Length: 166
View 1 (cartoon, rainbow, N blue to C red):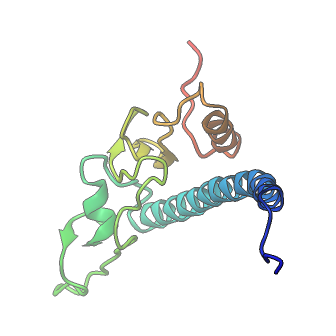
View 2: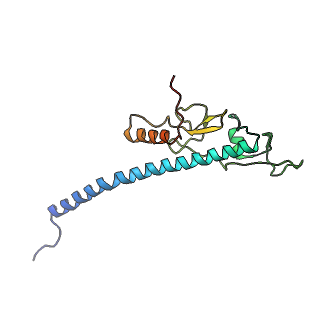
């Protein structure tokens, strides 16, 4: 009687072929995930910038102050930037907002913090004078080839704040 089954050589060949296929496919999924994060980040930033612009239009060209940014972006306010919980002012003044439901999180460090300069664990860099906002990229390691490429992609897209050369 002849034994039926696979030989050790046949099994090894199948394992090697699967290993080669995995080595080809896995990096493509990793790059797709990274590119998806970049695209999501750019979309979120574009939305934030448009909501800040809307706030400025409705508040006499004044951007939200740094100290009260989240309060005024997430709640109602009148034209004088007075926060209110009401959707309609008893004095029949127009009430604006909210502009965002919650401050979005930076996909690279999961932070929703706001700062005037980029640093570790800073989600967003905000320029109070102009009302412009950028993604915080200090958590991305420039020595890491993939993270450096992400940094450069975000800088090229105008999404990351780059301090002027001294």
